[in-house]
Length: 348
Image (cartoon, rainbow, N blue to C red):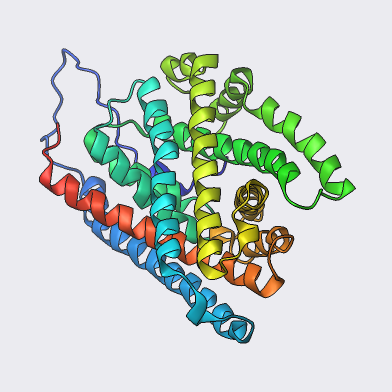
């Protein structure tokens, strides 16, 4: 896994071992540490500005796509209650993955305060809109490091959360696509037959222990023994269950958004709901694999193609764009709410 150099810069130096021989040190901060301290605020605001710019570009692209295809849509017929319900369900749908990440950190021996951990998780979510995928690591590590959370276990926990989310999302999408109104083409069946067992193989505790051994030979270095010992069947089953619940909630949010755009009796069926869960899950997985910021364009194309089996293509395209906007609203709302709660709640 690629680790941004800024993550390694942020690691605090280990405490020097006490010696019986006094040194001539004046105990004053060195010039390097003073320079690093002065550089941190600049780095912090640079990160904030980069994230903000890419978020604006993402929203701008979504708005231009809406204007381009509005002649095929009847905006007056939209039911904004279902659109709002979709935003709320997506907001709750982010909590299972957040819970899985916090439990993973604690399994690694890191005592993460609940609200601090949630704030770091959702702040890190905004980093996915920056190219390279490393900004998520920088934002979360930067948020947790001042509270005594070790950098190496945090980096591994992000890696675990990302890999399990993608693998479980692929499994959920491949399963639910078979319940869609139209039976999938043969190439999709073949792809699912390959994807499901490969994803299950990635989720084995032995796989993560092997990946840790690879990471130990990289710049990240050897992990604490508690990290390797934490990978048990119980931990992996618990994490996968949280992720599966999150994907189902995300798919339900997409279904509600689609129902708000074009409410027809055909959408209020189990098959239509399953198609939405498959579209949202596979769209996110393919978007992540594309390595584009936030899966831009790629995710919308996959969702549009899969939803075209239950609604006209222009409606499917607008639903994909509307779901992207709903995601942004939900993420900003969670960051705002948790920031307010965190201010009012004393940290331990």
